[in-house]
Length: 142
Image 1 (spheres, helix red, strand yellow):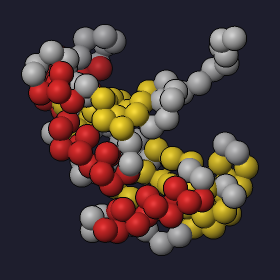
Image 2 (tube, rainbow, N blue to C red):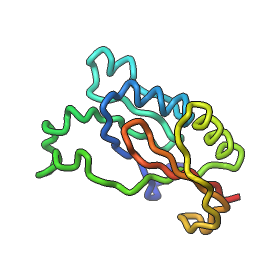
Image 3 (cartoon, helix red, strand yellow):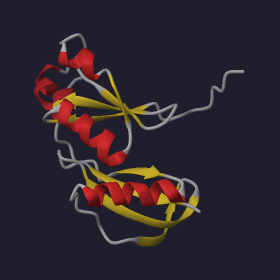
Image 4 (cartoon, rainbow, N blue to C red):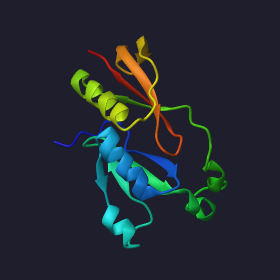
């Protein structure tokens, strides 16, 4: 059976160096890199990293911003301030993510408690930035 409910498919992040960004997301955040070899060979214009079975982050080279023609003013989105992207994880994965980030000397915020989100109140959350300055919140609900 096909589930046709509305889902988040992908998020596009502007990055300076897509290969370095993919390395960060793989090693620090624990995501699966996609199309890295194809990108390095020039066969595709950007690589991605997989968040879960349904969602990926595309790592769009900032150098492509001025070539974006899909909608009027698309190039202006480069550097556009998005407040943050939130990743909801199981408790053990939440702890493992924080440990990997700290192991790589990625600054992380203090914990926040009982913050509202898509699944209700999250027990704990914290924030960090990727090497390109994109802000992420990590949280767990139970």
